Length: 294
Length: 284
Image (cartoon, rainbow over all chains, first blue to last red; front, side, top):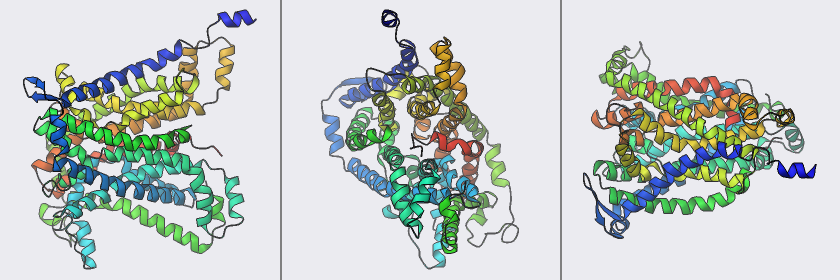
């Protein structure tokens, strides 16, 4: 018996690599190769039509790291992420908690609250221009009823705030759907036990809902942070970075540098510089996330 | 399903719950209402704050819809978006689902969690960063401004979702049937193809819808890697934002056209959505 077991290969030992390797090879070809090439370009002098005309050492990096526009876009992106992600996580979880109570009509509420995830971000940004407009815009008109006029589109802070509001509108639904999945997996026996000594919803949510949903919520936070650092469509469609370049997020600036001005060397250098910063932030996260994923 | 917490709630808490839900739904629906109203207004009416109720405050017109829909660019871009999103979904699944199954069922010398995290870490790479090499690669392959080129790029970024979500789905499928088939002498690929995959159909559908929606939504690559032939709807909207300036009607109609395919899919699969987004939620 033992001899037979030794001679027979482990079940699926070849098959599992047949399944896994195409995806791995694809990622290496289309992620690592481009990444290496970005690193190469970041040290090169690139001229459109001629390609790389020579290597310039760290000159591109020096240009980027001393560029006020680069740092400004980093700060705008950082503010954007720091404000939107926590709000989206809190609102998304609260909405999921309410819907998960299963009150009559809650299915209808679930459908509505989850819907923004399936809208087109650039269109929402463009629509935002009309909503925040000071001439007949919905938000301006509504706030005008109580005598408030905020210069949304003509000031940097107004523009960033407007973009953040739209982002919260669009992406809270994502956290909501994830949180709802987590909460609906909690068995009702656990609620029975928790309710016995609780008079209101708050203690049940804090002592039962939050801890049990936490592993999944950390993944939601991670995904939202990753995606939000790459944010482009909503703020760019809303303000196109303006007034001036005051509301320009990183992706918008890198996009304009590379595609409008075809400055591939500098564009690559700022990409790598940004990637290093993002990687540091995310790695700290990932350390915590690994435990949660299993 | 009604939660026991709801059943034991006081009338006051119930009222508060409904008020909060109505507030959330109103916040969510307001931009849609705004878009629908503006899409049937004349340009002059869009600047009139008093024009709120159709037929009462203003005369609705379908002019903006006809304008946008008559433009051949709209149709081309819409078709491009559909083809590219479907192609990306299919290609990501072809690559991602087998990998997900391998990570759910088999052991690897490197931990399967590490491999899954490695796939997920691809999402960290901002598209703007790899724009240059993708651009040059597509120029080299003569795939710039083509559906195929976009599908290749988008599949790279969505593969991670296919792997991570489907791994969870496969883990949830009971291994009892698979073990029985194994005893009967079924080959590993037969078990994958004829047992596990059919048992995971709802997960596949949810994953497909999510990848479709994410691809449909992408604008940066679409704007950078296409110029005419393969321009997607999102790239067209982005371009119209800068060329036409602020046009309330066009913005509204575009918003509404742009949500049709993904929202319809969402309405059909929302019951199963929890399964795709559970990320290994603790089963109580």
